Image 1 (cartoon, rainbow, N blue to C red):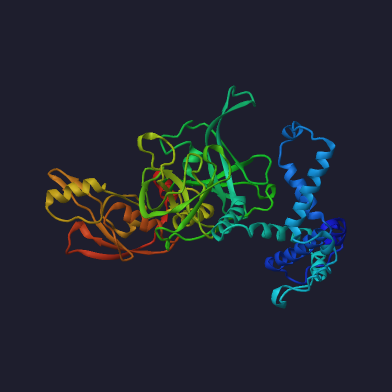
Image 2 (image 1 turned 180 degrees about the vertical axis):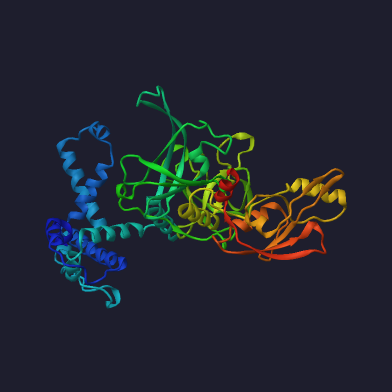
Length: 502
């Protein structure tokens, strides 16, 4: 009891000279030992009459001082009588026996072990605690504090404490020089959002519209240079970030900071979106309205949603959630109950343009994020695979189908890029003639997966590994009797752009 009550200086001295911990203590053992010691101390204080005195002091302290000071003062004789009556009554109530009889009781023996004999003696606990390092003692106290939380609360707190150091606050500004001959430049806020650490090399993932100031064609600032800053927990200042690459069609951007300025960088654990179930718990961490490192929770409300990306194409298989997502959450992580990344928050449903959470938010699925980010880091921007064709818009294809009275399920080749794999393979595009249109080849499957619309073809090609061949099922000139299977190896899209410029 004396050790826990007044020897913290000795504890600190023992901690400074401690050896590595050889015996692991569970929180249950510590808690029960402290409970037994507390009971022993309370018994000793009770026998000495201290309980009654402290009880009276505590009750008096509950009254505000000004009110207590205004009570009328009793005459001396009355005060003595009241004090004797009050004290004797409280002692009878507490001890249920005269004070002299209570003082003759033998002192209770010191606790030897926990109930059932499965614990440690008090002196052994003292010795073990003295061997704990300061960091171990801190962890132990934190565990004891968590014992008062429910299981789901402990899990949620643990996920936030592990994941929040990986979440970044992103700020984008426009840089404009007032005078071309001056070094002075003005910066204008362009956008703000969230991001997260991808790896220990300093790569930070966020949304394309966060760094662009909006979707393609709607972003502010035109061709003015942009400056992107990143704020991570533990950093007092914002860090300048370089733009590694972007993928507007998936609303993703990859930034990079100097890893030597942030120690340590803590990447998020990357999960998978393929096995998500509707109803499972999710957590979103971000900076809504600039309120950094805000945690909100919800569930997976739906799967397989298609939303329009910043580049104008739909992002397939997005995750819908009711976790509160607001402006500023864009680019932040959506986590499962184990703290693994399952999506990147990108968009909310805002009826009437209210621009705030109504319980319907969307996240780019983690499997898409993983594929696109790895492509950007390894090959740069605009490196997704392509076979070098342009396809007929789905709406036009459906009009032709109704006019001809036959099904046209697939992607009809409208143009072939010169020097592309499609040209080498001999794919035939549409041809306009004097009396109408001559259909070109129609791709109806990729690696055995049916193609019913253009997005099916684009996604299947883009998901292919770099320099890996794929199998196209082609209906020549849209004639059902002329179906062929062809092998083709996609190339990076930017290589096709260079070839066209030449």
